Length: 356
Length: 269
Image (cartoon, rainbow over all chains, first blue to last red; front, side, top):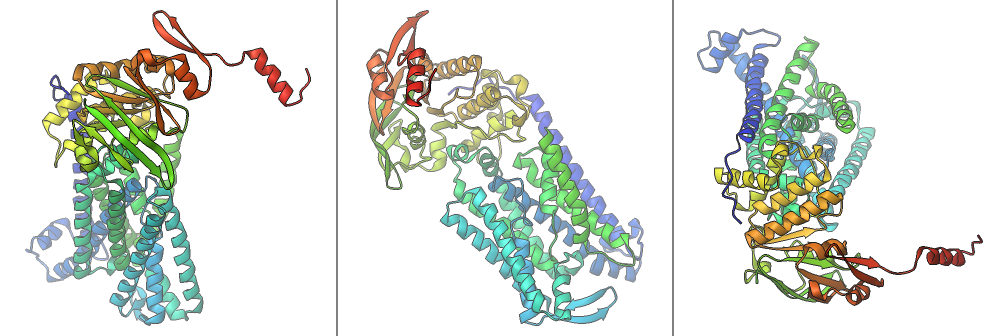
């Protein structure tokens, strides 16, 4: 075919620049939110001192300690978790061809909660302990995390196995996820019924997603998984665009649809499993952020992936900071706030979307 | 011969859908695949770019067997437009740009953008290029999808019922366009169609399927009332109106079928 009369389309290039500007704007917002989050808390640290502490020229040893060992890991954990859950949501929505696809709606979070509950019950990892704001301390967080991670991988494996048997149709995956979520919730309830009050408190406490649980070593693991996974997704951005155009069209464009769907599900579930295991259940970020950015930059994954990643980071970080400050000196786990903000925001998106 | 299909068979589980299908399409030709509902027209089309792996036989494009090629290599030779289109918040330009996917390595080049721009102009989509697909009409989306298949720079275009959801003006426009593109770019097109009159008007060759086999493969002169009656089980008469062949189904008249219906259901006047 000969298409030699084409020119570089100026209006399209402007359109692309506008999308890139939105992404850059969200990125700037993330940096601003990070500085603000680190500066505010029980002790308010001026932004100039935050900057000095971050660049290693802190004036006060105490502020240096607060920033480096408490606030910065928590703020970065919020950014990483928000970004990871959000890109996982984007990819699940694309490969499942379903706007309801998200880490929360596929039963992976529920499976993690079951794993944590099982660890508390069987391994006895929950202990009542008085320490300031936290009434309950999980005395062996790594055992609990590993159990949660194992359970969420089990859920992922089950979803993928079921869809393998019945071929990879998107509806099957969603329905399998819903059924598994219900199953794991039932399992958790069963354990809770036989738990004593300390164990029960530990189980319930674990499900409150809380970014304060992450220290630098956990942050490193979450960060590595999220960054690698996001890079993989970005590498597949055209594949996800093609899958959005329909399985047959995607195949005709040379996309191995089943492989893209399987790997997309596997990697996004893995990111979710790691984050949820370390921090607990944080709902709605993975559902709402992709939809917010779809409205702003469209469904093109070249722009949607980076935009959603940044939006997720900003949203969870701002929510986390708000949750820390709102009822000071009480510190609210961020998951409570995301659920309060996320559910109405999602309903709004649905109603606005369907009116069109 | 751009496309030649040789002894093609396709089984769905134990059910044989297509058997012993042979035909060829030359440069600049449009082939219409016709036959009753469920006869395997769409299946045949999907076998031609290995969306369905044929159970036997081969599909050769420029004398190379596509069943031995990687998916990207097939996509550089065969373009496909599905019957139903998914629409999302994707601009028409981006949707067409996706047709460059089999050629893109890591990022889009200026060359890709120029090709898409040219295809946008060819299909007169300039006004719509930055509109989202979910804000467009069926005919407009169909044009975008054809443009997407064209920028793949394929040797063979496969179109599944391209006019089934379009109004008269769009039907004529799209089929004329396909024929013009096929002639001027020296490629081949295979189109499944229900409308015999449209097929007679736009296609060069005709393939009638019946019971999973080819009943007739012919040029326009071979499309006779007898062939159509054998394939569809409806008696027809072919008229020429304004110099174009028109197929008129004969069958029972209105009064006869009313009488028959009343008789069968024991209805009185």
